[in-house]
Image (cartoon, rainbow, N blue to C red; front, side):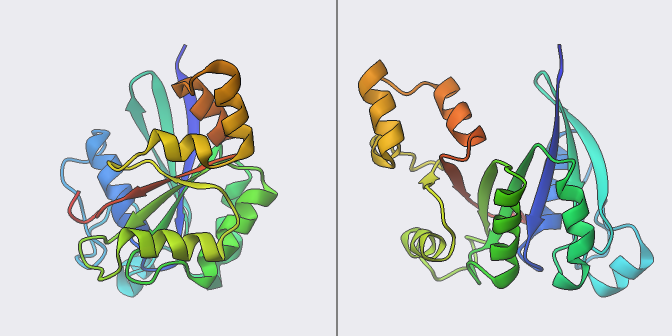
Length: 207
C-alpha cells in the first residue's frame, strides 16, 4: 500500500525554499530542468505577481513518487505579510522541512514557523541552505539554532554521529540502554514524536 505524505517546505523569505522545491520536483521527475527564482522560471511560482516580486505569495502543491510513497509538496509563502496563507497550509501537513539560510541563520519568521509546528504537533526536518556561500562554520550555525529554537537538534548529514544521537537526551539514552541499539524505526518514531529534529546541510542551488 502506497504511503501518502503531505510535506510542507517552509522558511523565512529568501532562505531558498522555492529552490529546494525545484530540486525535489526535478529528482521526483515532475520537471525536466530546475528553475530559478531570479530567472522567474520556477515551477511553483507561476503567478505573474510572484514572478515580478520574486517571492512566493500563494500556497501551491505538486506530487512526486518516491519509493513506495506519494509525497505532496506544498510550497508556502515565506514573507510575513502572507503568514496567514502559510498557517492555513499547516492544518493539512504531516511534516515540515524548515529551511534556514546559512548566511542569515535563524530569523524572526523561522522562529514563528517553528512555534507553529509545535502548536500543530508536526515533525520538523531542518535543512540549512546556502552552505556554499556562508562564512559561518557548521558548528556556529548549530549553536545559533540551539540558542534560538527550543528542541533536540541532531546533525543527520554526512557527519552523523550515532553516539551524539544516543547522548542527545535521557529518553534516547534510556532506550539505547534497554535495547542495546537505536534502530531506523526508533529514529523515525523519535522524529515523529518531536523528540529529535534532524539537521541537514547543503546548497539547493547547487543541487
